[in-house]
Amino acid sequence: MKYAIVEISGRQFWIETGKYYDFNRIPTELGKQITLNRVLLLNNDGNVLIGQPYLNSVIVKGKILKHLRSKKTIVYKMRPKKKTRKKQGHRQDLTRVLIEDININ
Image 1 (cartoon, rainbow, N blue to C red):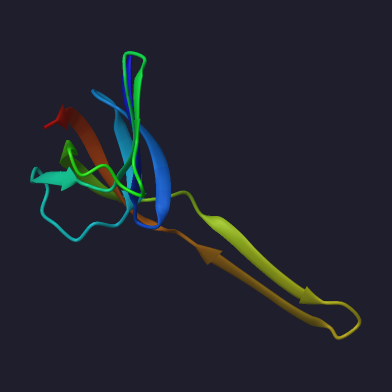
Image 2 (cartoon, rainbow, N blue to C red; image 1 turned 180 degrees about the vertical axis):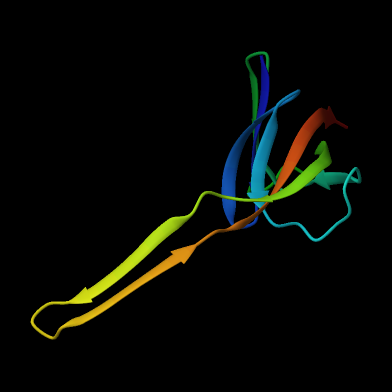
């Protein structure tokens, strides 16, 4: 089993080939190839490589499938005994990326 832990958009993701993941919005066109070079860890069938902080010899290639928005989350703020209430919704802009290959140079 081959997987990598990648840092993208301020968060860390466990990445496997052939699967898609939703990241924060990446401002590029649909169908375009992207490379993720901030690889923190790589497990290649039991051979574990750990970066300090990143692995420069590992490149993850992906393809942008679509841009979408997440489910609505409700933000509710209330100050007790002051009759102050604020209800607000938020939908995060996301980009769905299909991971095609994990290359080791």
